[in-house]
Image 1 (tube, one colour):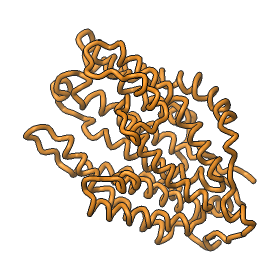
Image 2 (cartoon, rainbow, N blue to C red; image 1 turned 30 degrees about the vertical axis):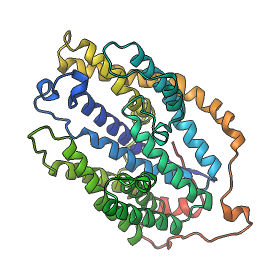
Image 3 (cartoon, one colour; image 1 turned 60 degrees about the vertical axis):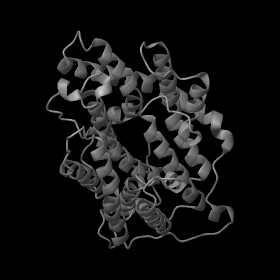
Image 4 (cartoon, one colour; image 1 turned 180 degrees about the horizontal axis):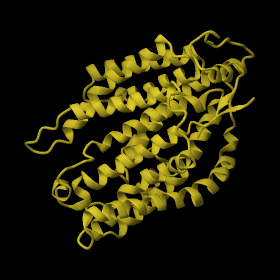
Length: 385
């Protein structure tokens, strides 16, 4: 069995998403500067940078489907825990320490708050997240848990298509009839489900040939992703100000088109060690940039011009993120994997029952590149991150 080349372009897109969110937080939100952000940066060039999280979710749908193929539930969940928790635990402790010592803050977490946050399930039990960026991890966790049910059954083309169709349909019903949310909307991750399913649909195009089903998943996902995104855009509006929806729709469409381009192989030429490095430090950068970097912006805003301070702090946060990846994430991954190994990988249910099911395979004459066709038919697995 041979591995297919790593999709380095996804590492680059992760970094783009992280820097988009960082630029938005550093230049377009008021609480970093404790004055209107438009006074600091009048042109507001990164006012829509919050859409970087949506690119994260699109990539996550692609990568999670890729990493779950051929794995059992235990192995799948183990890989996610090893990937998420080491840097997350560090961020919880660093942010909690900062909240404890930083003067003038309206809220200081208790020991119980910190302990619950270390589980990453604080939203599920009604405990306030220590850092604002943790909301997206809660959305990711719900996606992992839903997708793990499919991994438990065993991934096939038809089952993944059915999973996306059911999830999109249920999310559409929830959006229409449960506008206030509720338990159903929480379980279904209604506002962000279309982003995950779009990523999954792109992976189906990548692993198999593009089909009507995979195109339909991506198209329907884009349509269903628009209402929550437009609602969020209006929340960004200031008193008496109307923010146009056009740029938001265009940027979301660009994210979708980039993922489709990845799926169709149009961006396979985008390669380089800098992409791998950028992708590696993206997660700790996302976790720490707002609370740690935002504190630095606040402390030095009167000593250093904002136009200089922002890139300096951003560069420092990139360095810190690299150090966290190099000296925490990498060494701790193997230790954590051994500690959790007792969970043990579980084979898909049809293998446990001694059953053999024929998975959907595209026709050898399908419109795919020879590399992908040979890779799938020979049973190769993609490298995952």
